[in-house]
Length: 265
Image: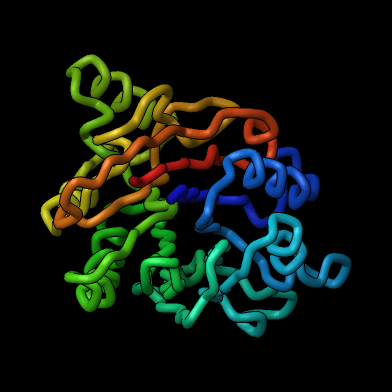
């Protein structure tokens, strides 16, 4: 089973041009069975009424969309949120809003039940706040209440967590470089609280177990941090996993994130 997580930057390249064709090329090249998407407008706008529907047809998958910002949130807004593409039938899905509501808008998590050949399987596609670790921790607490229902059932959690893992900065010199970078950008000092909490809650980072190659997913123009993850329950016995940050063109120009691909067997 191949699983991809990809923040598609609102159907735009970093240069501001339309990217659905490039996103489709990336997904097709990975041969993923399940694809979680963040920053999805659906429909995409008057000139392109359903980029998500087009993308699903292009790669031969079913799709589900979970809005976090409604079309009527303010004049000119379009429905915005998370999506999932699946090679297998989608049985049900639901969009969960994650507090708090901020000036940036609402964050959320899409829950999707798919029917694999060996039975039902649930995926949670999540997108957390990009500015504050404290807000991310609040959002994780809310998300955990939904995830708890699948504690004893097969499921995956994936998406753009906007959070750093201390496993990526094990050496003191790496932490020092990270702190210097944060300070130069005028950002708060780095923290690793969220990913530590998620590990303590019983989730395993696919890259930390089976990852190889470069780790950074943001940004392709200056890859310096990993904020996109695929996580599986620690209760999975005997699972074998490989995981990579997908760097092949056109992923280097399609979005402001590189996607992450994990294969489970």
